[in-house]
Amino acid sequence: MTSPFLSKKALLLFFLSFFNAFWAQNIQLSQDAKVSVITCGLGNESYSLFGHTAIRIKDDANFVDAVYNYGAFDFNTPNFVPKFAKGDLQYFAVVNRYSDFINQYTYENRSVEEQELQIPLQFKQQLFENLNTSLASGDSHYTYKFIDKNCTSMVVDIINKTLGSTIISKKTDTDLTYRSILYPYFDHHFYEKLGTSIIFGSKVDALGTKLFLPLELQKSLKLIQYNKQPLAPKNQTILHFEEIHPNSWWNNIYSYLIFLALLIIWNKKGVHYFYFVTMGLLGLFFLSMGFYSDHLELANNYNILLFNPALLILCFFYAIKNSVWTYKLALFNLFSLLIYVVILINKAHLFIVLPLIVTSVYFLIQLALKNKKPIPIII
Image (cartoon, rainbow, N blue to C red; front, side, top):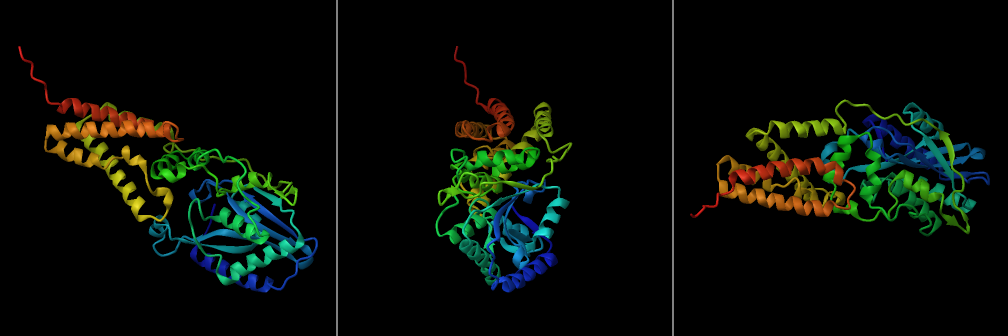
């Protein structure tokens, strides 16, 4: 959904975009001008797992063939990681020559498809001017939000603004949650799938009614009517590449299952400490991120019922050999896991966290049985 640029390149592209936009302000598009939505295929980097959306303006009579891209950011932004985590990282739009844009995706072996919008010339002109005004004024800078504000939603917003109403809206998969929609995008990226499954909170379990993914926009455009005619009746393939999936010896479900199986087989007191402390610290991290970050996707994270900070307290009483509280906290965490399983019954990530649930239950039952106060037998 994004396109990264190094610092100097980002600065250069921004200024080139500014001057190009300023120069383009007075161009009057011809009758043969074309406006289209560009959908770029999935990549294997974290920023490209979801594809990308852009707008193309083509008018041979005015020697215009430009791609407006709202997914640029600068890796060398000071405090890049904290800003991204906080949710106040600035993204911005750039305009590229179409040939340069296509060359980049050819180099990355990523497919590119185009959908021409069937709109009157006056709206093509208005969109062209809105795009250039956005670039020249700095309005194209925005604070990135995973679902609510990204390269796809920005494209949707500026087209709808130009047409004067919400013509483009989501037409497919509206009965699926955001989590269910996102889940397949992480295929062949196991630990990314596991990580997003456990750090995302309840917001992504809402029905996915917003257009925020490039392929979702592409599918919806095929179904949208404008003035009783299809808005984008044709889908033209510009570049086609077979998807190449990474082959990793460790980033897969097998390393995950083997690691947990080894913990269960080893089953020593030190293993219990390591496992529970790790899970508890992750829970504290998820909890703090929910309060710290402006990304609403991280708030209300019920996954802390599995990654329970109370496990840290359990470890403390386990270390000082306080059997009463070790037993009570083991039962508390088992009860939390029971609630967690009930919550997960209809969630997409049930099976990916199930091995962690089983491991936690196994260790907690062991601790509970070991520290349960024996009931005296009266003869």
